[in-house]
Amino acid sequence: MTDPDVLDRAKEMAGKDDFPLIGFSHLEWWVGNAYQTAQFLRSHLGFAIVGYRGPETGTRETASYMLQQGDIRFIVTGAMGPEHPVSDHVRRHGPGVKDVAIAVPDATGAFEVAIERGAEAAVEPHVLEDDHGRAVISAVQAYGDTIHSFVQLEGDMPGFERKEDSIAVSTGLEFIDHVVANVELGKMNHWVEWYERVFGFTLLKHFDDDAISTKYTALMSKVMWDGTGIFKLPINEPAEGLKKSQIDEYLQFYGGPGVQHIAMHTQDLLTTVAHALARGLRTLAVPDSYYNDVWRRMPDIDVDRSRVEELQVLLDRDEDGYLLQIFSQMLQDRPTVFFEFIERRGATGFGKGNFKALFEAIELEQEKRGNL
Image 1: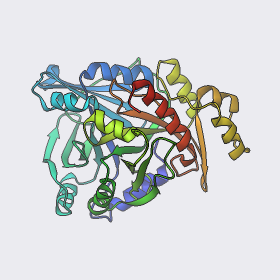
Image 2 (image 1 turned 90 degrees about the vertical axis):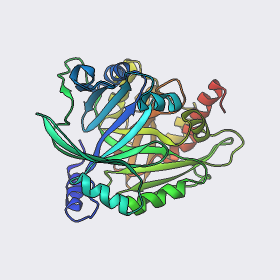
Image 3 (image 1 turned 90 degrees about the horizontal axis):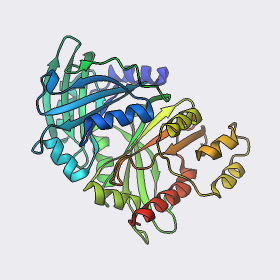
Image 4 (image 1 turned 120 degrees about the vertical axis):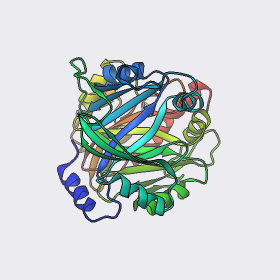
C-alpha cells in the first residue's frame, strides 16, 4: 500500500491547504468493450472485479466494471450504443484513460477553487448515494479530452453492484506511482503552469531532449508533483528528431493529448513481472548490450542478475537509492497507452539512466509498425 508516512503527510496537508488532495481515487478508462477489458486486467494482472454498473443495475447507456488491486482502482466503461460520448471518445482515440480522478475531502470546495484559478468546468458538483456509500463528485478539464474528477467519498463507491471475485490472483501491484501525459509540441510548459496555478503543484524533475533521446528521436519531459510523493504527473512533449518520436506517434494515433502510461508500484518487481509474463502480458525487450552497461554502472546492486536479465528488467540509481522498472507493450491495437511496473528501493527518479535503452526498444517496436 501507499507509504503510511506519505499518506499521513497528505492528510495533514488536507487540513491546511485551501485545495487539499488526499490521493488518487481511480482511473476511468473509456473502451469499446468494458467486459473484455475487465477480463484482460483480471487475467493478466490480477485485478479483482469488485463492482458492476450497467443495464441490469439501472444504468441504461453504459456498462462499467470496477477493479481493484492494492490501492489501485480502475473503472472501465463502455457504451451501449454508437451515439454515446463514450463511443465517440473510443472512435476518435481508441481505448484510453478519460478520467484521472483525485480523492479530496471536499469535492465542491476543490471544484470552486479550481474554477477560481482558471480551470474549465467539466462536471458540476453532484451527489451520488446508495446503501453502500455516498460520493460528492465534480470535475475539471485537463489536457485534451482528459478530465480530473474530484471525489469526496464516504463508504464504498455508490452506483455499483458489489462483486466478490474468487478468480483474480494478485500480481503484487500496490499503488499508482505516476501517470504520464503526452501533449503537443509547445504545450508542455502550458500544462506545467496549469498544474502549478490550479493544483499548487511544483516542478520535481526536468528532462530535456539531450537527456531523453537516441540517434533518431527525442522528447522533453517535466514532472509535476504535490510535494509529498503521492502525486507525480510527468508531462511529455515531442522534440525535433530525424524520425517520428514515440510522442509524435502517440499524438497521431490517439488523435491529440492524453494519458500515455500508468506506472504501478510493487514491492517485488521480479515476481510481479514473472507472474504477468506467465499470464500472457508482453513487455518491451532491451538491447543485448544493456546489461553490460548496467553492471558496470551499478556493480554492487543487490539483485538476482540472471533473473533480471531473463525478465528484461531495467535498473537505475540516483542519489537516494535505486529502482527496477519494466514497460509493457501497447495494451491495444493503436500504439498509444501502456503500463509501467516499478519497484523503488529508495530512488525518487524515473530511470534516467534507462532512457536510451528504453527509447531504442520503443523505436524497434515503432519500426515494426512502420511508424518510425
